[in-house]
Length: 115
Length: 115
DNA sequence: CAGCGATACCTAGACAGTCTAGGTATATCG
DNA sequence: CGATATACCTAGACTGTCTAGGTATCGCTG
Image 1 (cartoon, rainbow over the protein chains, first blue to last red):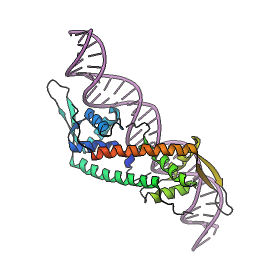
Image 2 (cartoon, chains in turn yellow, purple, cyan, green; image 1 turned 135 degrees about the vertical axis):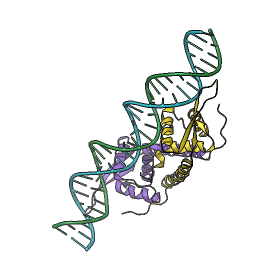
Image 3 (tube, rainbow over the protein chains, first blue to last red; image 1 turned 180 degrees about the vertical axis):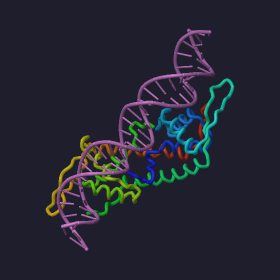
Image 4 (cartoon, each protein chain N blue to C red; image 1 turned 90 degrees about the vertical axis):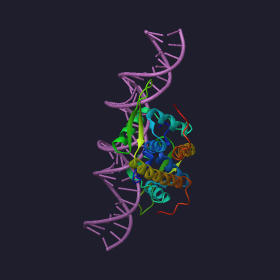
């Protein structure tokens, strides 16, 4: 394949950043939101999400903080950084370019002679 | 992630079947077409394409035949089967569903309260 | 108040699709 | 004749996601 950076294989990060752009969320909540926003098409599981959050944090795209409310389980909230917002914008653009390209192939105009 | 069958990670097959729907092609030609149709966004390489073609053949989605023209290199053409056309249709539908879901997340409406 | 299910976090290892980097062989052009 | 482009192929690496496990707390029910 080889887009500059294959967006089709990096979609979870994109979607995670996208929901975090609106508000700080904790892991379990993101899973719920992503499933809800996609009308149940996506069914993310924790084993996928947490490593991604940790990677995003390591890359400086998000920061995290524990929100401890008494009489409640502590929750680890994630907050998107400027770096993360920048990455999100770039990724969105790449996603659109990618979708456009796939659709161009699928709808496929006339094939120019090759040989 | 987990769509029924994660289309985002199976796009090459989809696109290969798509170009084959129009006419029989040989491997090298597909690479050219896919790059051309996508306006250069995709840059498939042979190492990816050939295994996919072999897999599609094994699954009965395409058949192949050598086209030997004198004074020319023999070329292995691929022809899409009814099974392949059926798979293509299903995959296209899944692709559309997938794109719709990602876009829904990216454009993201209001998040319903969770907690 | 003991037990259990839901919530909430985490990780190691498996799996699958793609890429890298190699290989072979023939046609064409300088 | 040698170099380059065409045309096919494969083994092994890489990477993103999934599976399947783990821990701990909260709230409900018997």
